[in-house]
Image (tube, rainbow, N blue to C red; front, side):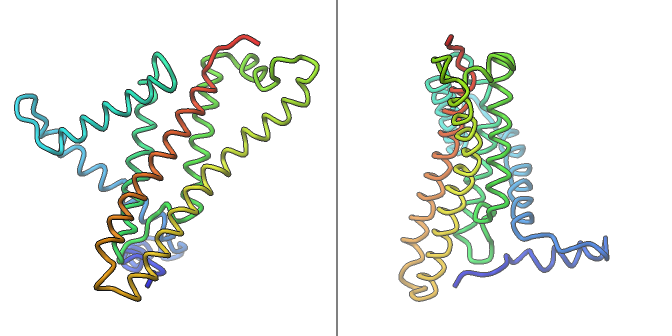
Length: 234
């Protein structure tokens, strides 16, 4: 069955209250997000010290292939110079994938199954691609492109386009939250019913779902960056 809290929730908050006795409990999704950060800060620096040009490990080859694929996608979707967005797209990919993988372990909770986490990421993505659009086109020209090509429809189109632009926050957040929360809840129910039959197939499905949701999130962000930084004349 699905657990309400991860195994780290109680000990983390016990330590937290010893340090700050009047503080509120730290939410479980925040603890899980910090765990993703700790894993990333430990694993990647260690792996970077083992990089070898002459005899690359299997994990190094996998990382190189992944980074190369992301660069190719960025250049194909955004165009020339798309590689400059690799860092934030890569950060989204690593955080979402590792966070989603937590759902495979009964003693952890995926931070992406909490709407606060997904909204934090969607707001970050929203601010980033709009800021890149302003940098690329200038504030006035960037705002003008929301008006569309027909000047007499510009006031109406501006309102519609701005609503659609802000709706992306909701779309990105709820899509990721709904899928991960649903997968985690369903896996918990089925594994509770048939714990010795379904774990391995469900883990395979969970890994595929983690990859798919990561891909969808970063792909949409690439499209949004591409649309924001395009320098078309209206």
